[in-house]
Length: 138
Figure 1 (cartoon, rainbow, N blue to C red):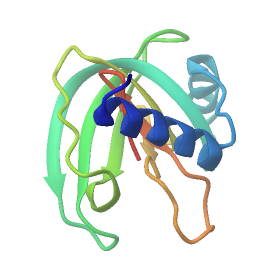
Figure 2: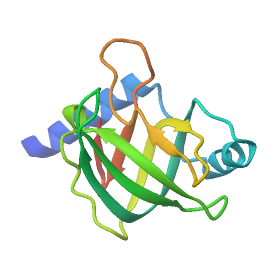
Figure 3: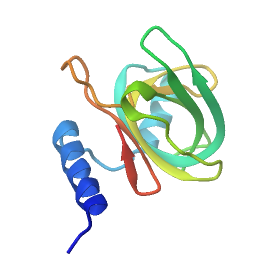
């Protein structure tokens, strides 16, 4: 019989699927095309390796934790990922760790940023997430 932690993890995964609408797998090439075209403001799912932890900073919409993600495929591109810790809580990431992120891509000359990597409770924006070490933070 599964323990309570496993049941909670399964419940979170099911809730995430319901909120995100059965998110497709990572499409790093779409992120690369957007970067080269200077395109912004669309939903992406990307995967790669954490190359730097940027810490937590206060902002107008709450504290955000950032890290740099080098894409796993598609092109040689490193992105900044920002997540609102008011929703996700701190994410225990490590340099070298592989993660998957879903959120909104915004073009920046150094690679871009993926934000909205958390659940959306007001219906204004699709929910996102960070998946690390088999756990979803949203």
